[in-house]
Image 1 (spheres, rainbow, N blue to C red):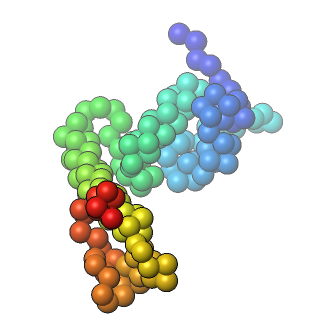
Image 2: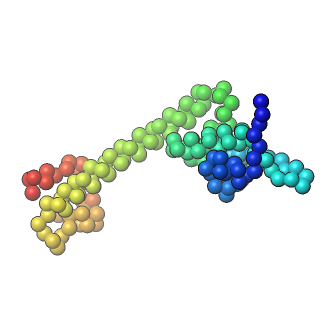
Length: 152
């Protein structure tokens, strides 16, 4: 089996990760720094490519670099229960964010509909709602029920 070796620039091009980001991952201990031969330059192998792919894939799933570091400690694949626990925590976090985004969507939809139906050009329901002004339904929270524009 032949192992490909490459400079950090080639590694960056191969993975699509900027050289400075690779160096940052090295400073964080996420990617080992290869030995520098006397009078030579450091060479990276396929393991570095795989590790960078692992880091980016974990980040795409929402894991922080600290969490990625924890996952990398389990990288040999023999700690599935520990990896599952980390993933369960991340899943709960993602589900909470989705619920928050759905609530924001409903509130924004309600505010947009109120603005669309407003007949008072001096009192924008959106602006006054965000201010928490009294007398404006929702006081910046919205009730999650969109207004029927046909009912304006």
